[in-house]
Length: 299
Image (cartoon, rainbow, N blue to C red; front, side, top):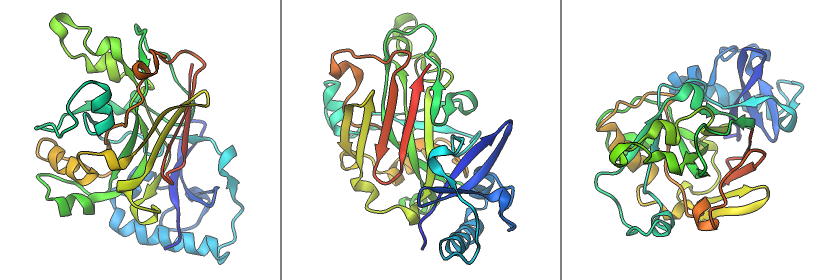
């Protein structure tokens, strides 16, 4: 199939879905088709029907059967690709090197730990989108392969979970390390520690699994802060594969189309770099395989 991704662009208060083809962007609102004026989330809610239409539209554009004027991706007003998913979930303790840097055994935890974050204000897209969180002195980064759901899941098998994956994007699980356990008697405080505004950047676009080049289980994961490499790992280190994460989560929570699941990070946290915590003005560049580059700045 012709390779494409899906992005969301912001025009004032309006958010529009767009095709991304070879570093160019084509808003669906400008194309007369059944996909016109659909959001990315709406496309995912009927993914089995909409995917063939997106594939055909991509072919028409790449063969110039449908002549359109592209917008260069670099100059497009990108925001997070899926606005207001029902859920954003994140899996913990899933990379061998990250467990080792925390001084923990590099083995699967049973049960698999995961947590939820409120999506509407925590999820942001590329750009100067990350406000420095209230009350922290230890603002940290994690770079995570993020699964995008295209079907509902409950008590799923591995095969069902694989089938429900619509595609992948890049997620940053930003954390206030000093606030996660700041409550009385070491109480976990996920809201202050991981869910303040702007602490879950996702993007720059969503790549359908059929368009992903290479093996999802062998993707390079890299994160830079102000150009300096902080994380350099691979999805090979994952203890729970993406579909296995979905199986475990679906036993507890019903997953829905458009939901996002972050699947863990390799080693390279701020503490392992001498406590080099994030500050205002720091720029993060995150890369995972061929999923693009997610760039954000702390403001």
